[in-house]
Image (cartoon, rainbow, N blue to C red; front, side, top):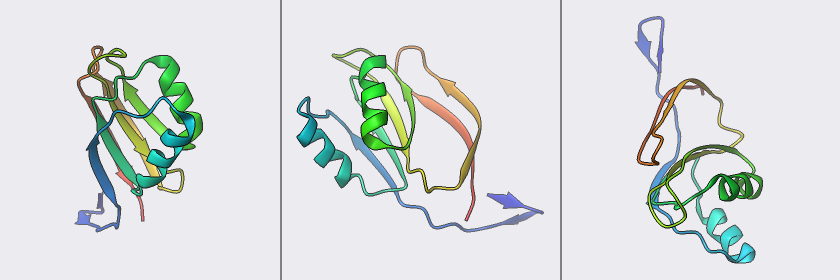
Length: 107
């Protein structure tokens, strides 16, 4: 983050992981609880629009997703609601291999 020509440090916990979430709701909620980070980057989510909407309700936070299909690909960025950030620009790969964000994270 840059302000008036100075770099400012911010404390933010980040997690990067491969993900294959359980179809069982109780197990999936337990898996979400273990993602104890402000920002979580997931790959191989095998997500669809339907699963993304379901996960968004269960996660209860910001979700940016690029879907593959239910058998392959898919990436996701999960941000906790209490993270003070502003997303300026988003690029989603149409086949679920990457997400590019331009984001400001505030202290």
